[in-house]
Image 1: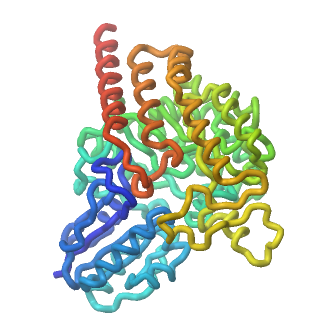
Image 2: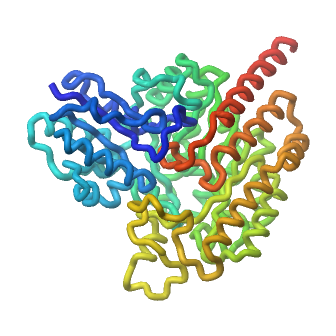
Image 3: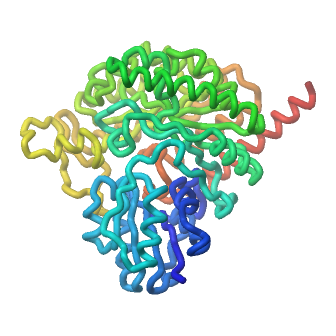
Amino acid sequence: MPRVFLVNPAVTEFGFGLITPRWLFVLAQATPADIVGDPILIDESIKKFDTSLVKGGDIVGIGITTGNCAVGYKIIKELKNIGAQVIVGGIHATIFPDEPIQFGADSVITGNGEIAWPRAIQDALDKKLKKTYIGGRVPGNQLLPARWDLMDPSNYMAASVQTIAGCPENCNFCSVWVTDGRSPRQRLTDKIIGEVNQLYSMGFRYLLFADDNFNPGTLGRIAREENSVKKAQLERIREERLIFFEEYSRSVPEDIYAFTQMTSEITSDPEYLNAMYEKMRIRGVLMGVESFSEAGLKSANKQWNPSGDNMINAIGTIQDRGITVLSSMIYGLESDTESSLQSARNFAVQSGTDLAQFIIYSPYPGTVDFARMTDPRNPNKKISLLYNNFWLNPEKPPVLIKHPNLDGPTIIKEVKESWSHFYSIKKILTRALNHDWNLSKRTWYILFSLAFKFVYVIDGISADSVRSRRPTKLPFFLIKKGVALHRFLARRTVMQN
């Protein structure tokens, strides 16, 4: 019987990972183990794939993004020389389903793989493998839990659990709403709770809710929806989420905490924000600030996001509730100038956000921006791509665009200076002391800030599989020690009280 492998390609091997690649363990769940046995999972951010383990006729599933597809294509070539049957899926394959075939793949799955993957395996066993399988957008009640029993928990610092799929927004720089839809799909409560309790039993105390938008149906978002059908849908989603939060609170241990992604519109809905903190125990969020200026937000098609002092107030509201904000800012939007980037750097410090990342604008396939830049009928583009098929070029520079106001070296300089300025020892200590935190949280924050800068400078927080720089183990050591100290001091405080 052929064996089944699932491979998460990575640009660089780290030996450890911050967050589990969720898709790998979800497709392991979808693998028909009663027919082919448990799949063999390979996460190259932990250890490079030894293709000599594969024999002719074995079935290999490879998940690719735009950032790691070139590595995946190299693996395909090695596997085809062995005689394996290679099936490729992931965001990049969904956008460009013909490209993996051109690089030697036998088949491509577009969209979600929960239903299509087992069909492809059966067809491969029957020697009837099709070129393409349409996975589509699987309904929330059919989104599978992960096979965490196949994971070595010592390899990762946090595990990823999905609670909802899709995002109702349509930001120009984002492909999520294109590939995963604008109609949020809530997963079944018992599946989510089952995963969290399993991970807790494996020793995890920190999770990532791997939702592209944890708050798709807040009061503010509902209020600005003009379509009556969509408005009713968002109202239903909001009620479902609040009911789910209550059940989650009753059903999982109190000492497991989470980080997630959300929009600033959470501040329009105090009930939802309170439930995130109290019921879901969310203690940190990645929030897309993108730009502090109205012109920058217009470039991103995110005018509903607050700008200037209004964004500062939003960040303050969230952090006053006890949730650390990681503000994400994009450098290189159409309206940006050298002066505006310097202002953004200062504004980030003044905003009071506990964490920040400054990332270089990159128009990825599947986004509105990429479509405009590659459309020959659009000759009036103010920003243009410098490299066609840049994802296939391992020597590509960090800046992929020709900007009307900025050259590549200037964008890179401003990004580096922003990281150095925000994460200077003085600024970190000032932020730690400005909060009404106990010693354990201040210590954790200082260690985490230093580690975050070491790991994510320039790139920003992203999947381990697409980071090209191999960091030392010091940042991960700092995070682990900070977490351990935080938990020790917290327990001691409880005992003393």
